[in-house]
Length: 165
Image 1: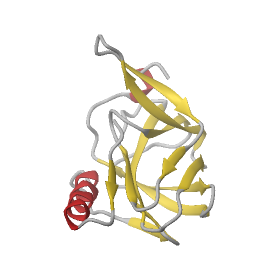
Image 2: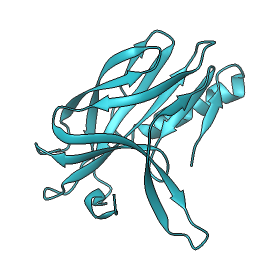
Image 3: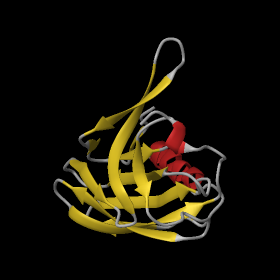
Image 4: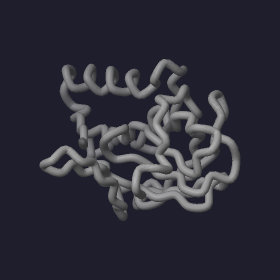
């Protein structure tokens, strides 16, 4: 699922604001602004203590007139991180696939969320306990390197290490 919102229409602005609030999953929303980009509530749902991987979510709003692309992510507390998308087959089976980049069109908000695009954090080297802030660097084609902190939010009970990545 790939949700995009235009930032030029009032009704769509309201929808984007609601989506940003929904991303907060009950926790206090936070984010970072870098030029025309706003990173909205980067978060990780607390994985099981024995999990070897987790997923990261956020909204990325581009208020500018030029598109950008998320081309990488660095997270010091994991062995490997990459961007994924989820594809659903005709029989309803979800399959996660690596993507090289995520387009952030001008005037739109892209949501990285469960069941859609997300960040995979593989080979956790530290516990991802609820309430913790996990530093990371998002790498954009035009905006460059943007430092963020993922908040570890309450778990949804899913174990992402068993999802066939």
